[in-house]
Length: 287
Ligand SMILES: [Fe+2]
Ligand SMILES: [Fe+2]
Image (cartoon, rainbow, N blue to C red; front, side):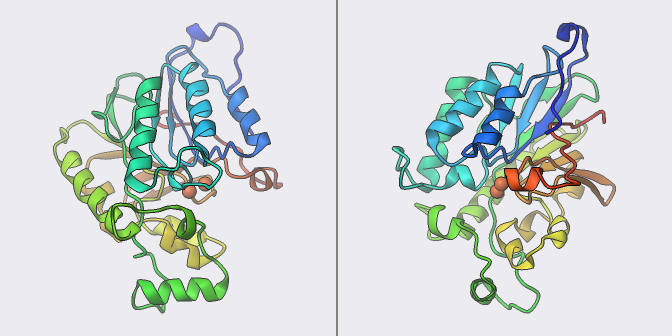
């Protein structure tokens, strides 16, 4: 991976707002990426947009390691952190697992979607950084499906089923789509309360709109990638940049004049592929 290289005196450099996601530290080679990840200046902030890992101990290790190096780490959860793997001593499910991870972050000084949105006042600022946790609701369904059930059925037929179906429990909600609806409603209220004159960096593991999923190799997978409920948020709210991951397709796209940054590391088999851009962590505001 391309990593910021420390050379000379890092305190001489101007602080940057950086973003990365999908560290997937259960893979040894990805753990090494975290071990080698360093800020370029003493004042760098790092956004970690979900999928750090699955086991609570590994997630804590990665966030602690990064929080000791960066002036501020900001985390929003991915689907993998929300799994309850059988081998994890922490057997909490759904909302309780999320709240456990938020508590871990609080102990490390890492900001989460449950904290006031911090203001970045360095280069490219001021911007307010809003880590979001919105999940998905199966509305990015296959073109011929009339509803969630049909869309899921087609995914099973195609053999493209997200592991969330087995390990991401929505408790106490009846379904992941109900948890998503609650998160969207809560988050929408908080964003509406933000000063509209201060641009936002919206950080969500899943893309806020469907367009970025059009390049997925398996289109059936899109139903686990977001919700139509947020399709206009980058226009409704004063958005400087939208940061996301989950797709493991790191790239920059523009939607209605708003820049979207997919900042995933992905699995070793992905980032080792010839032609992979290896362009994370990525400066969010001043390219
Ligand atoms: Fe991922
Ligand atoms: Fe993900």
